[in-house]
Length: 86
Image (tube, rainbow, N blue to C red; front, side):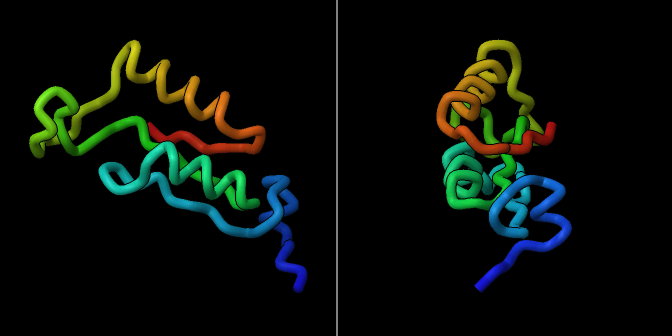
């Protein structure tokens, strides 16, 4: 069954599936898996927990080294397109 359409052709992906980068729910691993499976994965640049304490917080933005580590993880873990929202 052919699932390609204008969206998948525009994004140059196998399937017209876009994984939403939902802060606090989606992970870089999920985004990589979706992209490697033929869709468009999405990673979020902010968190809803403080990574230092792992306690709920208002929006906690990744900064500096965390931001670079996320982008490097995405860059080196998939040869496919991965979207980033922030």
